[in-house]
Image (tube, rainbow, N blue to C red; front, top):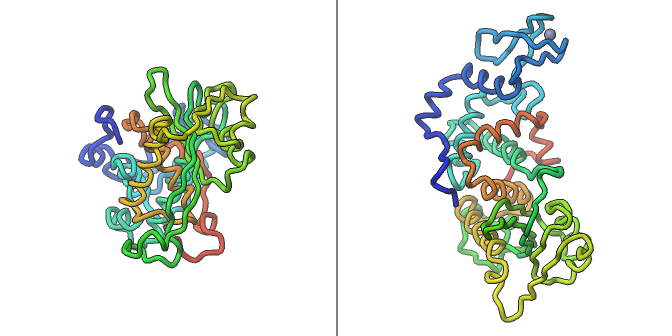
Length: 318
Ligand SMILES: [Zn+2]
């Protein structure tokens, strides 16, 4: 699904550019503090990096120390900064991403839980941005589907039990269409029912008012008629992939990705997977900047512990 243009760094280029902790810390500092250190103690703008691997800067004004990861999702991590960078490089350069198990072996991490948490934090940074600039505009296809989900009891790799053992879960997706009819950004969410409230909430969060909406004509969309330029395509004899080709393609690629990368989706962390897939789809023509964008996303998010992602659970299961 990635375009060939704008390729990300090769692994060899990545290794040359980020050989050690210091080079990663310098890169993160340049991204976070483009105009020089922002000292959290005295707001001083001048400082120097201290020798050693801990990514510490010392303020020239108050001489207090600041970690380059302080206030970011990477703070207090057991994992070295270079392993975070390597994980980001893998996630942004492999078209399909990877499972925690694959990442654990690629990074040589001792524990699967550590790899899982790392990946979960990266996925959190892929969540759809909020705000006016993030809203889709112009013409937008919006459609619903349902996909099979493995239950907790299902074996991680055994697909032989067949679909009858799988629960179904409803999703809603939106794809922005440009003037040339080409697909732009996409967004996906778990849909907790086909009511006008649920569908309306998704559309209002994803699509700017007055934009054109292409839908399947489900009654729930009628409530949006005053806010949007609604163009229902009643799917009768015409197949859905003809009237909403991009939404249809989004769903079919999502399913293939889930099967190929995770041996099928599971309910508890499904929204994080949907966010990752929509992020990959939306950035397919901007791969060369995906690494820094994602690093920026991690830097903008406060540190969260394992229990914040899996309340009341001892171990992750994605
Ligand atoms: Zn200071």
